[in-house]
Image (cartoon, rainbow, N blue to C red; front, side, top):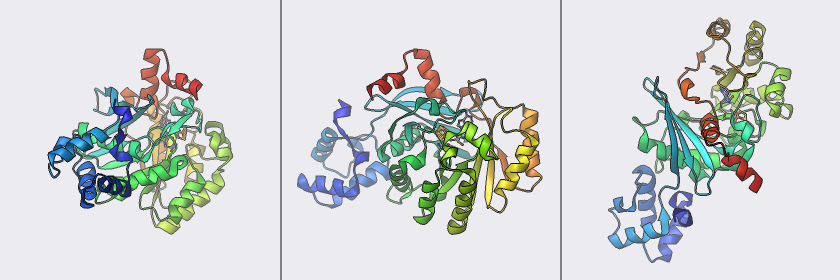
Amino acid sequence: MESDIQSVLDLNPEQIETYFSEIGEPKFRGAQLWKGVYSAGYTDFTQFTVFPKSLRERLASDFSLRTFSLIDTTTSPVDETVKFLWQMTDGYKIESVIIYEGKRVTFCISSQIGCPLDCKFCATGKMGLLRNLTHAEIVEQVMQMKMRSKYPPTNIVFMGMGEPMLNYDSVMRAAEILSEPEGLAFSRKKITISTSGIIDGIQRMANEDRPFSLAISLNAPNQKTREAVMPIARKYRLKELMQAAKHYTKITKKRITFEYVLMDGINTRDADAQALIELTKGIPCRINIIPCNSDDPHYQPPSDAVIQHFDQLVNKNHRTITVRNRKGWEIQAACGQLYATNEKNKKATLYKTLKHVE
Ligand code: SAH
Ligand code: SF4
């Protein structure tokens, strides 16, 4: 069974070298294997024609190149946003999304199975945390989508399930492999790590001089509202978060993206727009306005008129604002939602079952 075979993606270069030396093969085989796995993206050991046939067969019996099985895809009939639901070898499920917008092709990937932070408007939050993803499972999402995408990705965003900063090491290792020349060689700046505001992680990214882009989900312009929708705001308070954001832009000389999910009756007033402008003043940034997309009647998007008005209010202040396109709207592309729909259809929820096992 595939689950008994180790994934090549789990191995680091040293482990691969050790493996080859143990089976009496020269060191350079390691680099050849790495190149085939990541640069060439081979999905079958028969494709490794640089190796003698016997070695290909040996590798095929010792390792797998892919571990996910695709159990559901949903394609929006309107804009061709595609959402994938994968099953992992231990039975857990995660999702990833491709969003096609003109020349922009965004791969949205997950960093955890579920999320412990329980944001009120978020479907993933309702699952709780089931486990962290390994760096290999994070990279595999990109590899699997590349095999199925109409075009190669132009952007990779950690905006699927989970809080990347709570799985920091695996997320950074995955981002390295995605961007290393001998890995997937994807542009480092075009990899965006989105956080709900875990200050330690933001500081660590700045201090370690990580070359990736950072997005912070603000979702509210003041402490009180933020706490009401994002419980983690009690620990990482807005004031300190904004200081950390400022510090990050100073040290890295990079712009931050702030995300702001518009929720009707919660954070959409003119005063909220003003407070958002005040809050982000002096920080080099871009603000993404995202209409909330949820089944929950308490967390609905405002009308198009309100969305536009909010956008204009903030725009008046001459900053770059993008109302995140409604792509994926029809297939519920906001985080965790394909998962939720799939599970609802089946009535028996896998994540609940697994939660009891934990
Ligand atoms: N945990 C990280 C990254 C995953 S969530 C974070 O919170 O930033 C990615 C983005 O999806 C966040 O900006 C989050 O605010 C947004 N989001 C979550 N639920 C949503 C919903 N129901 N509708 C619209 N956006 C949502
Ligand atoms: Fe977790 Fe992000 Fe969802 Fe909040 S919005 S529950 S941090 S995935």
